[in-house]
Length: 161
Image (cartoon, rainbow, N blue to C red; front, side, top):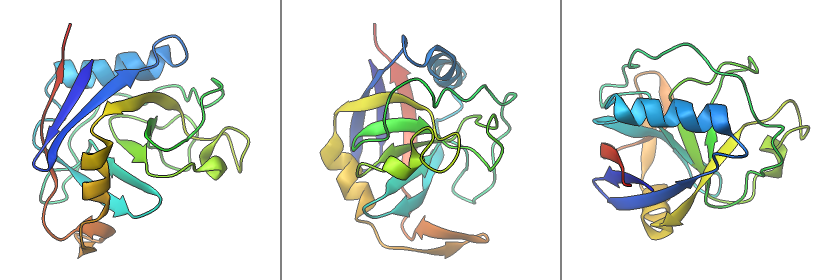
């Protein structure tokens, strides 16, 4: 079990190791390295998703490891409460950033509009925290839109068991 401890509360996450082994191993390695500690949820779009795992409170990107293979064709869908790897327009560009779906976002699924976004886990407890984060006021900061006006910090991410 993974726990994402935020300044809004804790989010417990179950990973889909069998369906997304590359994404899960990548995520666990970032957790083990302490990469997520002190990062923020830097992109919050109500009724869509909250995204974090790659920037600090100054909107500076943290250094990452090499991008991983996109596993969006694993049969898992971008449904409410699932975690998926964020990426650029390049299919195999995901590094540390992830997002939590607030709704079923079918257009992000494999073949929906392109290769898709790899779902690698789901929230098992703490969707109330996710929804609270989704409700914060947002604006522009550091050249980015949809940024929480009051910083939503990922204090630490831990692995139990």
